[in-house]
Image 1 (cartoon, rainbow, N blue to C red):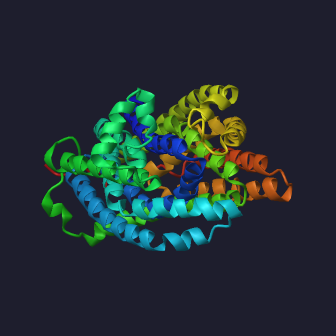
Image 2: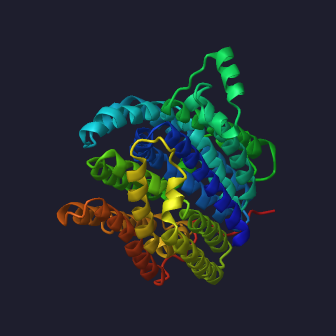
Image 3: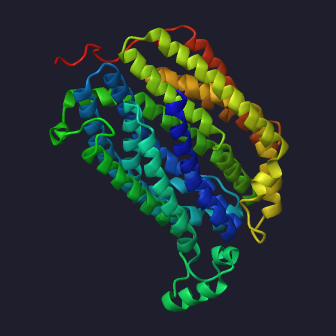
Length: 471
């Protein structure tokens, strides 16, 4: 379990590095830029989530076919998933690019947010959506390899991609004029020479989007190479790409609840963002920055959850149901222990953690640090529950019970989080503190519901024919 999980944790850490690199450098640009990506992210995630469920479907089916010793079927599932998801992502990217303005217009905002922050969010989103096929190319590769049991190769590919992003971010955001990177390195003379030679003064928030798209394209190309020209994953042949309606139907049937789950998650985030957008930019910035920091907490939880997904899938494919259940409880206990330690650190040292991502001249910096520190400290209460919930959701998905995972996620968000945020922030008039408290309750409710449902044992059934391929 740990051997499967630690590369997934590293992959998620590298994923967060994408977001934190953008947040760090845009924080040096302006507080409004941080607020802009805080608003943009839930809307971007909504379109990503529509196709994301089908990558989960591919991972589940590859894991169960691999456990059932059916290599040919695993390769065919991989090819059909890759072709289907890349097609969907291309369509979603085009839709997102052209409806960005309409989506942002639905959000309520105070005067300064509407005048300054919303236009910056639109600039970021329009560029980002054009890179959706590259984004999904890596997502599919990573999911298929995870189902096969190989989590190290996607980790290496992700590392290369993050290095490219980290290098490009400050250059494309600031160019070679007043670039804080050169000041940090004490290389002002080199900056002046490069600016004199190129005249490139940076692209602001659009530069962050371009850096992400380019680095994701590098990851997608490397992932496709691994799938086609190495033996590190399921064996894919060109004949496997011929559309198979029965296989596509199974991918859609298993993946649709996951897509719905992720979409409702995104809608909940959009709803929460709409509530937060009615507050001043400092609260909006603290909300986005706090969420990105708390996403670090999800790393061990999500890694163990996805490792559990693979272990449950392969063990059910091999008809080892008791071993699958033992792995789930072990992962839940391990996740709870790790996240308890992280919660203690976050509760004691929230201010220095938040402050590192804001420049000394950033607008609203003091207020963002104050709000963000309170947010991180309050949400530390739920960290243990995050770990348990992610492991149990991984178990349900690995068993193919994606409808159950979807239902629990909806309870977590639409009963445990969205209404409580509104109640505390607006009905009781707690303001920003009400947002922070409401956000913390969702995973506590979700973990309790998931644990009760898991103990029923109704998830112990394979989706695939468990007889091995004939020799």
